[in-house]
Length: 294
Length: 283
Image (tube, rainbow over all chains, first blue to last red; front, side, top):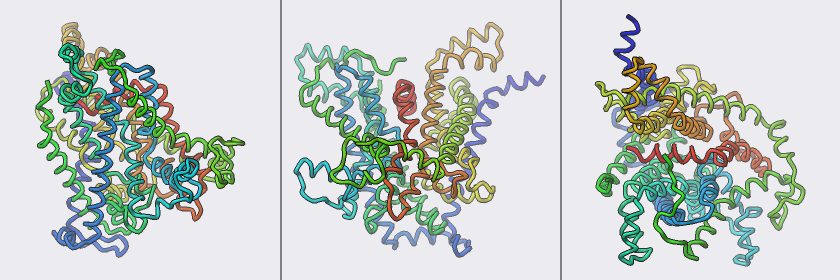
């Protein structure tokens, strides 16, 4: 009898425990985020008061918010673009006849697999002004003759953050694009060879259109992960110098955890979530990833 | 399925500039890792000598001994191992049956539930730090490993379900049919027929879930306070908080934090790449 019931509702038994846990760790916190964003909630003052949409109104006059939003777009835009271009070049090279492809893939993957906070710390150490590796290299090569304090200038600090990001994340893009390239049938290239196509023509007319779905996936995943990334900024610059590398992620962390301004921190969290969704939908609209999938 | 054929695809050989580009990129990729390793094996005072020594003169393991003896790195390591292993186990045990059900059964709510699993991957963890902090505070779980294990399933469980579903989708349903005709129950079909065939998939998703948990930063930073629950990546920030950053010892800690990445990358690259492409491509 019991066995029969188990068998009849088998598919529900199989999903039930997972869905229950997801309800606890995904659905509840997400609703809680929207709910908390409607409150003035300050842990230091110990005050919790319903304020409706006041926090969202405050957002428009919060100069920090707009400044950090700008930094976020600079950071995400550059890091994602550079890693996509680099990934496209590298995967195209690895897709050719090359010796030791497996070893190359192993070496290439390493930066992606180490903790991002270690990536941030390591680049901080590389860019350190006196004993750092970058200045030492430039000096030994005779390019500069005195060390430069990369992380005390807003622009070079941001470039450092972006560099650390695409250093760590280009491998992911490469793997995704390479998988897309490897699924292209050889006959297409053979036919192109018969027609006397050049390497560049084959890349532009065969490879690129056919890996459009992979490009879409890489673009979406990279953007999702760059826009939420706290690790690198936190470890490499701590938002500085001044506030020149503060991004929305670090703003949420400071508001929510350091200053215990939990209501307003949640409001920025909601905005970050909405920006994420808007970006994913606009990529879908622009790239139409389904169109090249056969 | 093989992910990377070993024959050439685009039929071209590599031009000289492509070789140079690849070489430069590999140097760029490896240099920071080399810098971590040489710094970790240098004497703390040798790090502050100019010109920089590219090959450590008197390599030493003192920095590693120091972080274990004088800093709570033993606790951090244990916490990292316990939290990452438990979360991986939890998510594989709960996620695999769910993925099988999503792949094989067309029941009410199947599409909606699977779609919400996908959508949940779009939610940035950083946005949820306040809800998670309040939730764990109410449960009295701040600064415990249990909080970390539960919280990591936020990203691990959807990931495992997603990857495992695409592995199950690739197995012909004829296999289920044949077992059903032989009189196997639904549970037996899953456990004795399908599961053994998907072991490579389970290995791949487990390894990636382990790496994701091990490397996790945001939730752990928010939910832990002391060595009772802090993990290695969070422990590294201890050094940054010091007035004077002790780079040699910090990099020894960094090398410890990078160990699983290096082991998995060197020995199980096939699984990592397989799970990664499955997790990303199939929608």
